[in-house]
Length: 160
Ligand code: THU
Image (cartoon, rainbow, N blue to C red; front, top):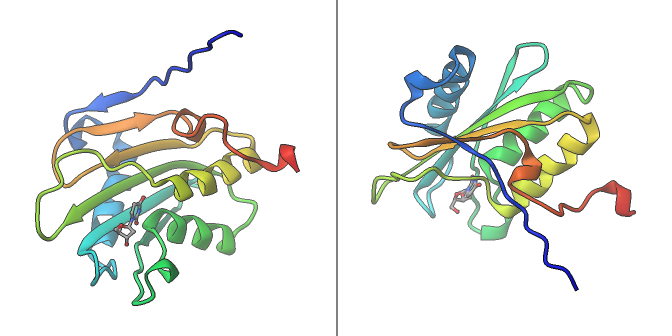
C-alpha cells in the first residue's frame, strides 16, 4: 500500500482591479447577470460568465423552481447555453460570483460538485483547460487553471 498526495495550486486576488483586463470584463458580466437570477427560494443569487475562444461572452444565472431539484445552477445555465449556441466553440475562462439577500457573502463561492462535473465534460471534450475565477460579493477572488484542479479523479468518457 502506498499513500499518494494530490495538491492544488490556486491564485488569490484581493480585488477585481488586480485581475487581467479581459477577466475584469468577464467578472463584471457575471456580476451584472447575477442580478437577473431567479432565486426566490434561496435568495442566493449566482452569476456566471464564460469567455469563449472567439472572444465572445456567454452568461447565465441560477434558475430555481418550486420543485427544488428542477432548478439549475448559474454555471450550467451559462455552459449549456454556450454549447447550444455553438457546440464547437472552446471555453477559455469562467467567472463566477454569488451574493445572498440575508448576509454578505465574503468568501469565494466555488462551483458545486455537479457543475464541476459538467465543466469536466467540456474540458475533456475540448482538450484544453478551462480557467476558473470565483468570488463572493466582497473579498478574495480565487483562480484555478483548470477544472481538474477542483475535481481530481473526475469521471469522463474514457471510462465508458
Ligand atoms: N448555485 C449556483 O447557481 N451555483 C453553484 O455552484 C452553487 C449553487 C445556486 C443553486 C441555488 O439556486 C442556489 O445557488 C442555492 O443553492
